[in-house]
Length: 102
Image (cartoon, rainbow, N blue to C red; front, side, top):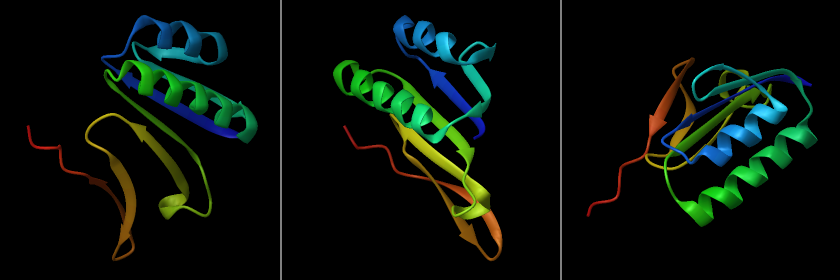
């Protein structure tokens, strides 16, 4: 079990209600849980993915302790622009994808 943080931006109210039922909302749109198991984290993310696919609004970022990932931190993202943690010259940076052209 490890600390998990989810940050939402411009999403429907249903996300807030659901996330508040399983995590602590420490600031508007910022949810934390100090001891979330991988199974619970995966199920929460599965719900977020289903809703985001159906509703398609806003963005959601989730991060957690993941020793095998760059910087020991896992990252999942829904919405635009996508982000990825990468290691460059011994430093961990966030790589943002390009927004699609209209």
